[in-house]
Length: 114
Image (cartoon, rainbow, N blue to C red; front, top):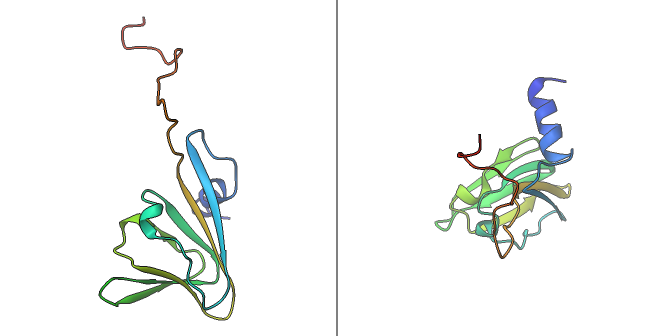
């Protein structure tokens, strides 16, 4: 296992640091993901199995296979589809949504502590 592979294992399969979340999407062959790319604005997506096709509003398409890492929210995508004979499995890691109050922890410290 290379250093890159172990980093991928930690990010996409192991425990995540506080403040991050992981979602797994399973899509049958030749079906659309049914998720707008802007719903995952800061996510990095791993194609774990299958093949993902991303289509832009002008109609251009690009395919991503197993092992591809995609900053999905940065792509001008209008459609996400599973292509090929196998089901698509995507793992998305992103920052967790902040709580409604979004308060600082009381024990967070200060630059004036000393």
